[in-house]
Length: 83
Length: 83
Image (tube, rainbow over all chains, first blue to last red; front, side, top):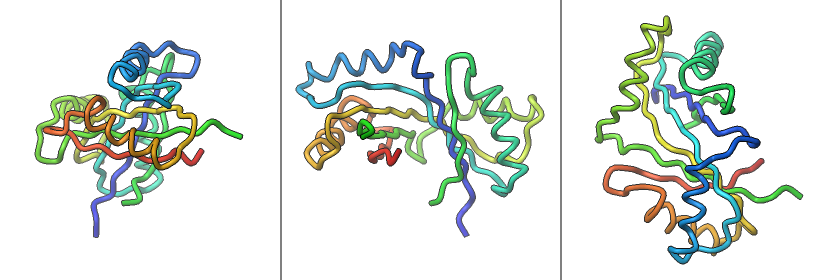
């Protein structure tokens, strides 16, 4: 049986400037890439857990809100890794 | 019609030390969180594209390999955002 994993995705809120994403976007034409109109950069956490039950997911949501993201400027999403 | 978006996920290779993930993992017990046995931290890019066709996805795979990740120490995955 595979070990359960939970993914936490943290992205800058849409209304917040994202200098990292802007830098990547600005580099694309210089490298010959076209067709991408915007880039946003965020973080991705893979948490290995003992069990992906509801209590653990609730705890991870609190973790995402207090430790993994800054809720003033970032949104987060928690989901169980289907793999 | 929603604007097509492509997600690029970049994670440290399993055999590579991940000091950011280790730091998060080490902070969890101090904050009262239990039940998480490992943390890996990576990056997540949201690319807004004109069209999520095969040519664009092939270009984004090249972009992921040359600009968004360091293939010596990181793995990447490209997928179309279903949202």
